[in-house]
Image 1 (spheres, helix red, strand yellow):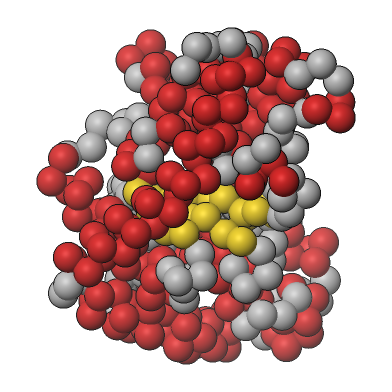
Image 2 (cartoon, rainbow, N blue to C red):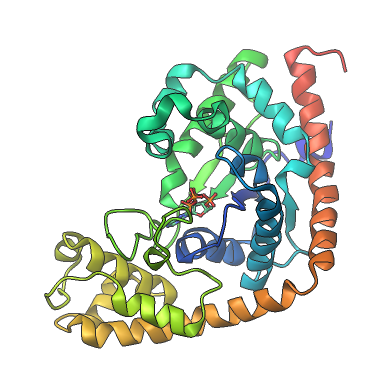
Length: 344
Ligand code: AQP
């Protein structure tokens, strides 16, 4: 029995982030901030998922520097790499190998339901890469390679985790004889906080995203205080004062978005934040949001800049994470291959 099988019931977190450009407030509030809080209670594995990044074309030299920047952002936000594992996905080849096995478990019909593929491929579906289509299968491999039980992510990833559960369950049915021998636990999404889907500052119905052509649509973790202030000042709003109840707020996408960001940054519920601002206009609310955003993000971007002066040190941290990740991944993949019937 491997160590991992003996601690079958222990909780374990896996989550990843793509090195596809500047990280933004959505990545921070939807994912990284929660990772920082969870790492003290649950053994955590975090990955810079470069194999996912190349599902859309990337410029090679830019991919390298984005990988360093994302690692720096994660560490600067408070991930302790002595406590948690932080590594680069492509350095652990077992991710790709398990993804292939899962390709032979996952059904085309399941992938056809994935809304993120439909959004990202858009009208140009025939020209999208096979990798973009199979992205959720690789994500299932990322999670299950570490027998992870919990996956803290933003709301947009919920459907992919449901697919990972379907793949795990199907694998168990195909390769183990009864429920007690189930090889994989079904991973649970952890969608935490008041800002699980941060929206664009220019359009409250669109997700804040690294790939949005308008830089004004997002607050980057590298933005200066002045940039943060200008972006929030220019953020789209409506002419009404803030309401006193959530139902009304939800009907006003931009107001809902900015209030959700405020409540997440100030670690309070949306209800509580509304008490502070109900009846007030955006000219009262926005300066307070600006102060809070600068107060939270400036120390992170300062620390990021300082870490990025020593890229060799970041490489060492990633290499160390790679070793630790392999220690878990190798025996799991060996067991999977054995169950599938490979001679190895
Ligand atoms: N707007 C968001 N609100 C809340 N959470 C978000 N996340 C992303 N955008 C938001 C969460 O951040 C984690 C890492 O995301 P990712 O980098 O792997 O990819 P993504 O979801 O595709 O992010 P982007 O910014 O939209 O990237 P591009 O533009 O490159 O496609 C995940 O946990 C995600 O839920």
